Image (spheres, helix red, strand yellow):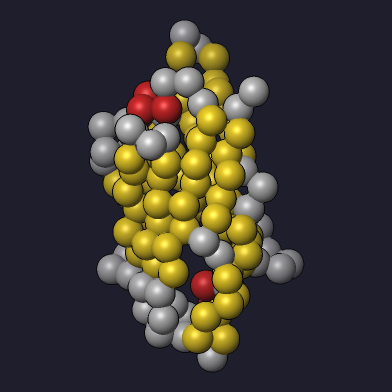
Length: 119
């Protein structure tokens, strides 16, 4: 059974940093695109950052220059380093694993971890 378990969330002051981790119990982890999404209260879930199986990264404009996504395929883990946090970064952050194989889409979510940034 596939499991994605996020950790590293918490309460920080504006300007501080956090590093989120997502440990994946998933076969062929290296073949999955891994993404971080977030959802603030009353808002839709939005893509924060993604890293492909080829280590290509992409970021939402609102985190460019502040957040860095990385992966360690030996540990089946993806990370999100978040620097210069702002109050508007407050949200539940979700890990996502995505792969298309043979026309079948595989898409998995973690349970989320809360990030709260006080101003």
